[in-house]
Image (cartoon, rainbow, N blue to C red):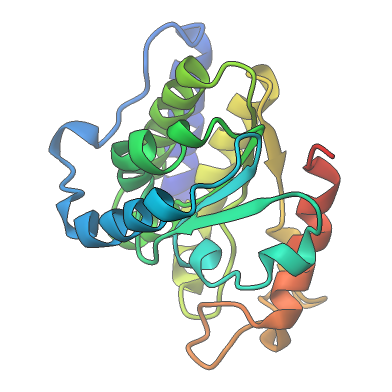
Amino acid sequence: MRALRLIFLLVTGVWIFAGCASAPPNSLAHHDASKWTNEINAFASVDATNPPPRGCVVFTGSSYIRRWATLAEDFPGMRAVNRGFGGCQLADVYAYADRMVIPYAPREVVLYAGGNDINAGKAPAVVFGDFVALMKKLRAALPQTKLVFISCPPSPKRWSQTEKIKMANALIADYCKSHEITFVNTFPLMLGEDGLPRADIYVEDRLHMNATGYAIWRNAVAPTLIP
């Protein structure tokens, strides 16, 4: 853990020293997003006959988003559109944003991804780099759209990765502060008084959330949504 903290301080120091002028390292050049082609094509098929309304709120990212089946009820009147695809990483969202986010001209994009990146062995600095690349892509294409990022969550199954998750969250949160991106820090809300993930908010796999967990996310995200 001490070594990881030193890496975090080094990455943060380099980023600040460079004045954010140079892009942090990312995995985009060698990341293969082709495994998601069928899922993205399925979204396109739905869009062909029932396209999302312009000015909607797009929720996108990995399984925590895909499994959020109550978006419409949780955010009534917000025209919430679910474009989550389970198991994806930030680089996958980057690869397909041109097909499942940008064309909708949303008034707001709510994103969660990053945990699968850490689980796949990517360093927090690389996860951060992929996040920055995605935010720059969305900002360039959608300059008037509000961008919201939900922090990487803790989970009993991946508790051994917690220090890396905290580092990725810290880097992302710091970037959001200076780039007009809303960072929703759900991480502490998902912990019990003992500092461990609350057992009552996860399903049997000890990774994904149940309705109680999604209620926490709903209450945290709701204040960020544009009426």
